[in-house]
Length: 111
Image (cartoon, rainbow, N blue to C red; front, top):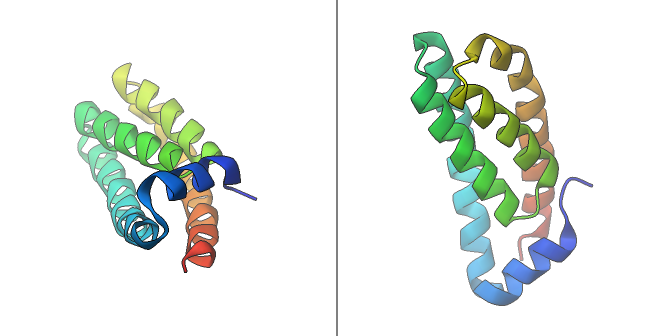
């Protein structure tokens, strides 16, 4: 299980059962774009853009209780902040795997 269900249920209660599907859809749409932004930033050596995309993915995934994805993204954010992009490259596949797993779970939780 990729998601912390207590966090997800809290979000669902705060946002309302009707709105949670919209939030999930937005996450499912935006998260792959953030990974793409990270890849593009790595190719161009843009540490600031890389850090911003990793930060957004970290925050968004934490909101849904995707703790593994959030933690991996936090590590990438720190590497971007420290301008150690070469160390981030081999970590991206783990982020993509965690995103795929979290996305699959979120799709299954939609009403």
